[in-house]
Image 1: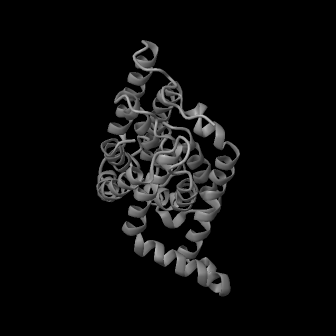
Image 2: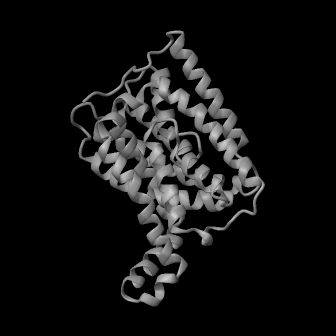
Image 3: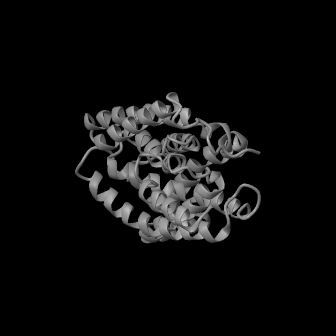
Length: 281
């Protein structure tokens, strides 16, 4: 992987990680259209450490309060009803599904699920799911994040695990789940970002050891992409949270559907190969 390729893919990662359009799908598609080798799951996971660092900094006060309250609740039972303490448990419970499925289906995730036909279809399908979820939310009284429950946090977690399939979108899947459960757009997005922290840090940390060996890209270009993803991702978080406080997800739905149709058409006409550049092993 060249430095230029890494810079472009880092920019793509930062722009798309927090929007409900699937960053892994965009990295895959951009690589194919540019004639580059598929950077692979390791590259994607490591660059996500950059965007997740942006989350840690942007929500640093919320995270600090959650960690402090959750830790205190372990030793002081009266603190267990504190919202921040409960949020700590909600994040832990919501992380269980992706931890189990990610470990159990790692080989499939890194190989066959990177087929562009799957990516295009999933972009369309979950774009429509997001549209229905947003419409469903509009007819209810939106709930704030303070009304989150253990059962709902598990549903969020199951939705997050779907993001293991390129094209679903981690934020898109979890936000859709939150909207179906009756939460406001802002509440659904905020918990979505917090929920991703353990999974992304664990995945990216494990994939770090693969850099520079086998099909994985070299350390230098990957670190450049990660730094760029962090800077762009931080700006994307601020913009996205402000945007959804006043507007619907319709533009993202339209974009997903159009992109999915284009991908499927390119594969169907032979312009690109469905498995072009897919990693193996």
